[in-house]
Image (cartoon, rainbow, N blue to C red; front, side, top):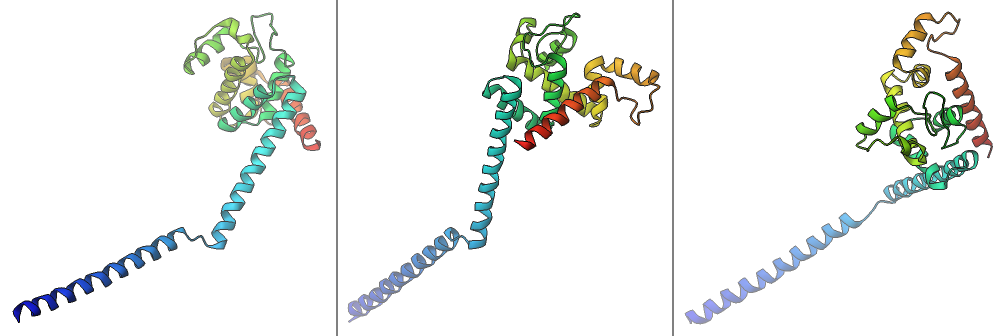
Length: 218
């Protein structure tokens, strides 16, 4: 009698355990479904982000192709300019303006004072920039397109940041050096609203404006 009673109790416990397991399984499946479900609005936002990324890449490609066209650089070197400018928050058209003014896009250009390459860098500028980047300084490498571009863009970025994004100060300092900029501003008697504005900075910005307009029309 007692044995039958115990068997009945055991059977009830087993049945209760079984139904509890079913409930837990269903609840877990419901949670998994709710986590994997995406509201239509969220899905639309995600698709929009993908579209924006595609647009960005398309514009990057178009700008690199335009840069290749006006400079004669390889597509990879042109794309390098765009990506370096994006990383450093520089206007690529200003960088192109600097290179046009300095070397007319000739990687083998050599100045009378020893300036070399696309950005017409001198040793007193190129060496510390290269060493700060962790590069081995080699004057002959200044004729290498990618090496010179890296140093040139880094120097422009440094000056632009140093002078609180005053583009005339940055460009005039690139041309004359930092002390040269200070001397120029002290003796500048022009009527320009910015005493750092120079023939050099004006010329670079003219090139930049022309390139921007030409690109927009393509």
